[in-house]
Length: 428
Image (cartoon, rainbow, N blue to C red; front, side, top):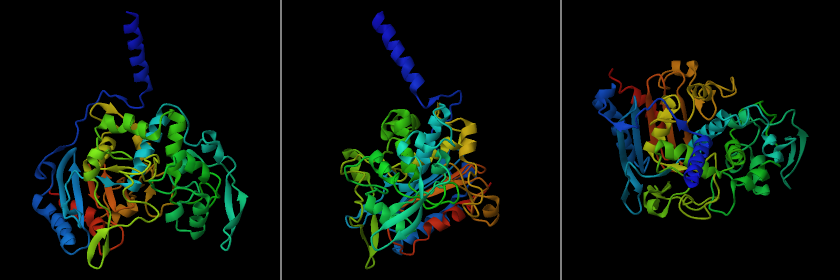
């Protein structure tokens, strides 16, 4: 009897500790349906298929996976071209892609799950949880010859909201638009994006915390490693490794079985090769400041909240559908509908140009939507370093995902035409 009572107590504690909860709603998982059943014309969507097919034939891309969903139904999910041209491996629609910056929306969601538990407030300083960020400094002068610099004190602390919205003043090292920050981050040994090296996100973030900012916190939009900082923040606040938190509280509950920072050996053959154009051919991208095989080899310790995940088109569509459902899928509540509304609201005023930026997503504004071809007001979207892209239109309940794995421009216009050729397919 005592043993039974102990087990029941453990179960109750486990339920309380869950960031996701059971929901009174029970929206079904994504399933496939005909385009016509969801207000699309198969004939008109064929224009998009033909465009991608031709792009493969012309050598503009080696291959792509396209997924279109509406009203919770997948109306098109196809693979085009090659996963690896050298070995002539054809691309399959459930192949796994490095989604890079598409990771940011998932990390932001995890942050907001902990926010819903009352663990912090969005305008709390990050130094409350990661003390190394106390008393931030802003870059004043920089000497290129010896990479030394001077700073001045920031007027305020960096907040969690600013990290979510890329307004903290942090930079992005090796892909930063400012050469000074590339040099500083390299000198300090900050790990950008992804790696096979034996380093943790916490170790890298603490190095980053010692470096100066681009500008005063909250002053501008500067694309940054803020979501990597928040990956480590999630570990501090939750008491769980970041990869474990995502698996337990987002991926498993939503059935995103092929999403993770690192893929097991049995799935390694499904990882699409990163390729670049060379002498009229698509060839494997070489090892540079990173090894493109990072999802399947190396130390597998660096859980980059800004760029580290790999996934499939369907897994990512499942994640986006949860947002369409007001934070719930399959009877699992990830976020409340009011939190979803906040995440998908512009948080940065006019700092992001014609569009807005929410807590992890670019948001289509009225001005942008009025130009045509840019989806409805409130559409949320982003993309990834290896040319993956997505958008989700809550008004029309349309999800569009196009997955590629390329580096180096070769005339590819498929992402630019994605929305245009999806919306022209409506026949309702």
